[in-house]
Length: 400
Image 1 (cartoon, rainbow, N blue to C red):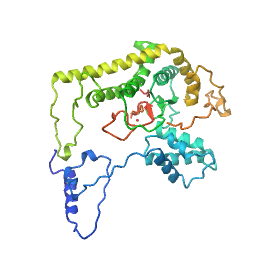
Image 2: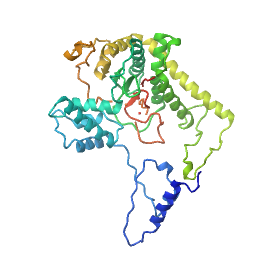
Image 3: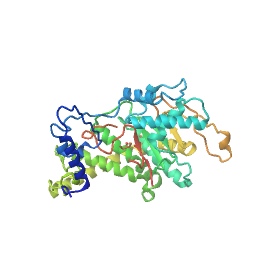
């Protein structure tokens, strides 16, 4: 391993032979693309080979608007379509994601029997692409619905009451993907770097669901729904301590090496570059950062328990709350009465509220995790602009 005659090295050698075989007067330009430049063999990057690199980042808001126009050119669009608004609500998405949104919107319009694709079709398509597909077939018990509602309400309370976080875009207890519920935050602008305060706020929001469970149901009744939240918060805290120099104890020291591809001649076993004492300090600092975020979340949840109750009860009644609903509840006002459609009267399931969604509405990091395309400047766990808190790694939600 790491230098043997495996298939990958044979492919590399064949490529290098062909590149060296071109004559100078043939005028051949060889182009290649990859989304993993970190694992390229140095032999490919020497002068005279692939020595020029062009970085293609994720599109900004103007780029997303242009991409949407290209992919929607063949669709019969309604007059209410404004691609600028849609582009603002899709930060962090690639061109392929935007093409998928256009395709999903067209499919939704066809299912509705509509002659044109309107803004509501695009909004629903954004939710499907960014949050995941709804699993209405998954039937939760009443106790599970209640626990999920309070869990998601805990995330939302932190997002609403902790300064500096992105606005809460949507909350739902309808299962999507592997998550039983999702709380999604949507940034108001593209973000390329992150402050210490913002990262600490994200960890606090991630742990808000567990804090709500502890307050309402007691420590003995906490669930596995916070598993993904804890995993992502731990990853974020460790990167703050070991990569970004945000710990006073560790200081400005990078600890650990990024993963290396052993099949490209890199190290099979990582060398130990830190002492046992430093490793213990890192673990203690990571735990301290997480404990402080958890304590802050518990204090905020306890202080705003009335808001927690309002959001949780609204979720149990409506299942999904958009940004307008969240703002109304945050202001202490009552939500408008539900409009029950005829097809839902038999089973008693509520239809979604008829209040229109706000501009730029989509979404996830959530907490997608998972936001920017500069790998060296942000934690891997915050790698999508639309922050989703769920079990799927760009936002926060409940998943078992």
